[in-house]
Image (tube, rainbow, N blue to C red; front, top):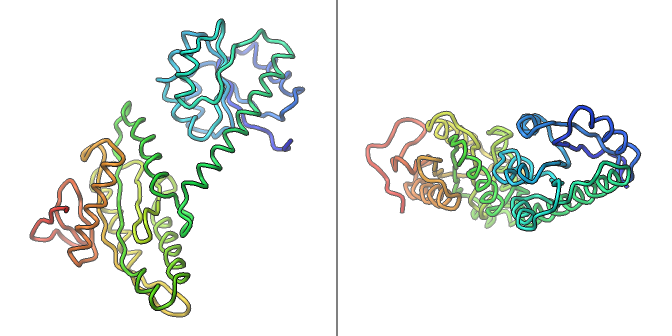
Length: 322
């Protein structure tokens, strides 16, 4: 058993029960555990926004458990944390299946508080956390672009879909930028495939360095990248980022002692102005990037406006995405 304590958020305990749970878990196998207690879902939502946990234990009545699929905190927790729900009274099979479909790892009956029940809780938490780790590792292995180490197209779509589901309750804007890059084929022809892959990794590093840690950079194909701005204040924010990326990519790269240059066309789509479906937003951004690339200039096209812009002012004419 690993020595690092599992960080557990335990929801649904009152002040009197807290020390009892902590004492019993301290003596239970499958640990050690570091437990944070919250009496309500509202308090837990705040805590989940401030800290990361390995697992979440929710003790609830049947009425409370039926509301969990609509609780925003569940969408916060299930992508990265193991969630176990214990329901007081008889366990309803339909409710248990709904919770599993919402990302919960396990649904159990809430037992009478005893030392044996504490051992069962410890085992359930440990096994749920380990299952979640295995799931995340498998997801990472199948969702990573091997050339760059970045998330791939499917990982980007999944992440966008999760964010859009949350935006359904709180429609905060976000933007997607697609970058089509020219120059990899030339490097591969002159310096070889490994040098081309080195260049791709250097491009990935530059893109990653140009944005916030909360933003997502993904590799879609050998010459196409995408960047998800998870939150924006104004539509122009995406254009400011596009200009910043173009400026970063205009600086030459060093490969095997030689200078290498690339050119990029960027397409922009935005939520909610351009739609609320991850695949549609990605297609819009890619189509706009193709329009920017066809123009023969290093710049970007905003899908919503369908108007060519470069790092200076707008072009006189519009470019219709193909």
